[in-house]
Amino acid sequence: MSTQQKSFSSSLGAIMAAVGSAVGLGNIWRFPYTCGKYGGGAFLLVYCCFVFLIGSVLMMSEFIIGRRAQHTPVKAFQTLAPRHKAWGLLGLLGIITSFFILSQYLVLSGWTTGYVWDSITGALASLGTSAAPISDYFAQFSAHPWRPALFLVIFAVLVLVIILCGVQKGIETFSKVLMPILVLLILILCVRSLTLPGAVKGLEYLFSPDFSKLTGEGILAALGQALFSLSVGMGVMLVYGSYIPVNENIFSTAMWITVCDTLIAILAGIAIFPAVFSCGFNPAGGPGLVFCVLPNVFNTMGTAGVVFSIIFFLLLTVAALTSAISLLEALTATFSEHTHSRRYVGALLFFLLTTALGVVFSLSFGTLSHIKIGGLTLFDFIDQVNSIYLPPICALGTVVFLGWVMPDADVRDELSNHGTLSIRFYGLFRFIARYVAPLALLVVFVSGIAM
Ligand code: TRP
Image 1 (cartoon, rainbow, N blue to C red):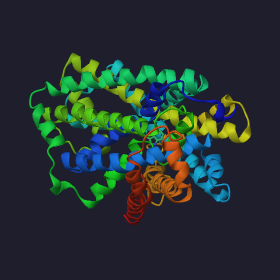
Image 2 (cartoon, rainbow, N blue to C red):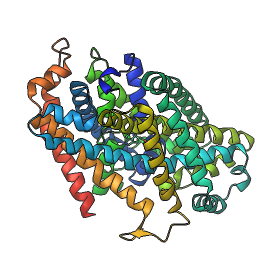
Image 3 (cartoon, helix red, strand yellow):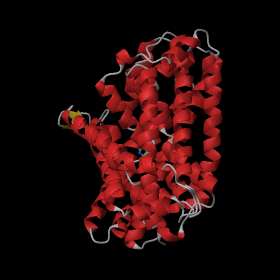
Image 4 (tube, rainbow, N blue to C red):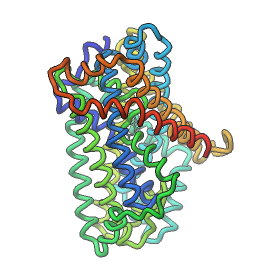
């Protein structure tokens, strides 16, 4: 079956599925700690500028390319640039990026699934309220020879099942059910966090900009986070773009997704920082903020803390699930288009490959920690590749393709739904796609390598 026959059934379904892809661990785990590291409010401000000016343009670009071509990434670029087939390599790079991101994402998702379980069994609650046992627990949990791998496999099977149900019955239906649940869970946590004594300090931290803490590195991190959070630069949004119904407004779809994604990241900040401040912990806790600091916060809340702990890690797992399905979908759809095989073949194949690789990355916290590439463990190495190298190159290639290679008339035609929508913003869009975004991405890429 080719992608041409597939499509989301409604605009709501398309938006929900793409929001599901965008909202993930990036919003709830990565955004709060990165924001904490680079000074709270100041980072938030810069992040918002990047996400709306550059991130949304990248998303529109992927949607335009995907929907115009009605193909998965490799064929999409080849179809739209028939005389320069080498552009297909950009699609291939995107798919390779998706493959590695999924393998790494499964590791983190396995941890969140494991923490749901450990919240339910009371294992986390039994650690008490001092910091050391909780950090030790996380270190032991991630280094355990089989537990993280087991949870990783459980999570990956869930992803596989949804993909096997198909685009409309699987991805769209699950996104429509899971996303509202996610919003509900995060709102419950926000209310709890805001009603803790001293919560205001957390809000001040998140919303009052202190530019002295915002370094050049912080500005680069903001752009990197904007790309990661919107899931752009890896062909996934391009594949979802090919499923967007023809009468759908690409500009407003991308804007809605960007708004929802940013709101959820801010809500995650509201759920986390006031609680962290109220309990007297350090907001700049780094990647361990969610796994080491939050269990501590929950344990100060007594029995109710157990419930909040379950809710929080469930929230993370649900968010990760809808992102992981979009990654597996991109791989599955591309494989079945190229090999003319049935969906389940590609889904199973990439499930097996990414799970196996994920388990290897997961073991690099314990059993395989002695294996190093350039001084980094396997997980840290893939983390670098996935954040510094691959997505900025793919994103750069995509905007250059849209801004300089695709005929202007085609871009206008696709964005305006064949002239039926007015596109007053087009001048700004084109300016960003041709100059601003390529330049910003080039700076991110070069400085990422230089650092
Ligand atoms: N946007 C996802 C998040 O915020 C992470 C992500 C990056 C992603 N690239 C992706 C998800 C591609 C799906 C597809 O967690």
